Length: 381
Ligand SMILES: Nc1ncnc2c1ncn2[C@@H]1O[C@H](COP(=O)(O)OP(=O)(O)O)[C@@H](O)[C@H]1O
Ligand SMILES: [Mg+2]
Image (cartoon, rainbow, N blue to C red):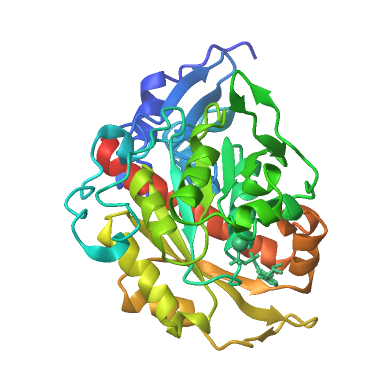
């Protein structure tokens, strides 16, 4: 039985060059995703496939396609082992290709507050992607979506940070059960508080609510800026930015200053009809920030028998996305457990990982990660 395998590495490469990345439209070998090919004496084949995000929704199907292709090419293989790895790609904004951040200093959207012209750009060298989560108004679940997106990406293996920029109602400390946490200082920078694998920073960690409440205009903007620049984030694959609700000066300044990879718009089925969402859209389009898509929150309530009660109407978010030529990223149902999850200091994805709400939130996270990879492929290749 000590026969030496005749399987050649070139056969494995040939087989894997027939496996396509469905999004990037090229084969895995051309994309440089295949590495560490090994064939031992008994004919055990192993190799590594490095995807552009650990949260890739197609991870399992790509893996199965690899196995099938290699199995077909070298039926004599004793075993086929695929190691799925990832290396998150960087936003196009790192490549000086942010297009459109010019020429918007003149219109009056933020005149009268001393904020003429584009604000100074914030650079975060070690952060590969910054995702802003926005909504037209408060209370639609923007923070809930941000938190579960962050935790979900971290659970998949990504390095993730989360900023709570809601000066007037920071909710992230409560949602993570960290009301009394205070960040330490290290070499003049704040050390983010880590929970469930996510690095957190919130205005709520730094000042009491009364102090934040008196901030307006430029002061509020500079406070938010500090949450980004005065924090020792280290290396991050994704930095999620839970934007303050609305479309005022603070939001506009932020989206202009940050090298955003893209933004996610959260709505509920019934609030898509409101002018606020349209305003948020207009703002992002004006400053040319890519809109990754729309997430519908509180889409339905799942009854004990598994049927769905569409309390706020059906598919408002999806229709809204379609009407505005945006991608739809998914729906997250209402859960009795969500409120508890939010209030007892555990994101529902942690407290109740198998609930429909959590399953949906993970799907949304995968979809967002996938679209970021796609977007980044337009500037890295
Ligand atoms: N899918 C959901 N199901 C049930 N309750 C939710 C859901 N999403 C958010 N909530 C609750 O709605 C309230 C507002 O959510 P939050 O995320 O704080 O909104 P925002 O950040 O947009 O103001 C919170 O009490 C939260 O727990
Ligand atoms: Mg919020």
